[in-house]
Image (cartoon, rainbow over all chains, first blue to last red):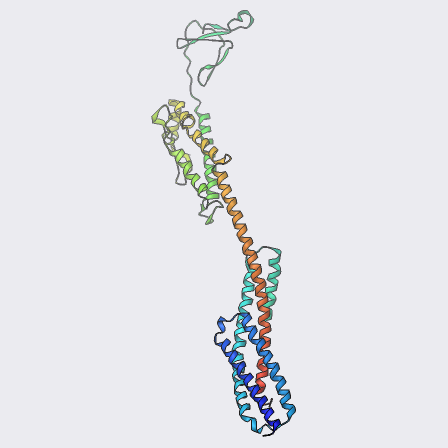
Length: 137
Length: 250
């Protein structure tokens, strides 16, 4: 195995490990999704974004080596599987956030419609609530 | 009547007369203080005693009693409108939740239907005894006009005592009751203070609630924006992972 191939394989291994960490971290959050605060969800996504940036960097370097990938199929296969799991788990995460956003929109409408509030501000807020409902469509 | 005053010629004595063996001297020919409720105009002298028949003016007294009943019923009507339940509109009056106002009707009813102790004849110690009773809604009316007429003709004082005797006449009781209600520091004043305090408390609670809602709303708007950001982020990250699933990245 050439040194270049070895380095490429090492990069693939690193990429795979990052994928595995992203999956593990994401699973831990999604398994207890109802207990998560907006902050914790945002933290997860920020962390994942940093790893993704690192993955992109490694990928560019690996491509620049232009080595045969025949010897690397095992890491490729593993990464493909992890990526599939992440795509599936992200669909769940996306749906959850979407529902939560709709609930927030409803609560905002409820507050805006609250009859206790007879001030001028109330009328302004009611308009805001309507704009949000349109966005929801 | 032995002498009638004639002015300057007998200025020492203007009038002298006898009623039921009692001799009266007055410096006027118009006498209003010899017989209760009767004013005598002395116009001439008589050699023998004359009989004077005095009949009660029942119609004016009855008018006054009717006036009393009307005023009483007006008050009841006001109380029903403002502190009771209107069966037609099926709505409660604005003061219906105030025990003090709801109790006034009962208190008034007790006064006008109760026995009056300070009367000179115990046969006339209730309004019922002079033909005045209450309807099922508490209002007063003259049920037996003959009874009232008889009472007035028998002795108008009996009727007068019912309303005006200084101990516990109905009018006196009502007057005392109303005075206690409306005077400064009285029941209505106290009740108003309680209501004012409740209004102040409610306004405070509304203000607090309003402030809470305003803060909550701001918080929700912020959350909403973050949710949108998150959805975009998840979507982009998912697209990134998707590239690895079909091998194009390798």
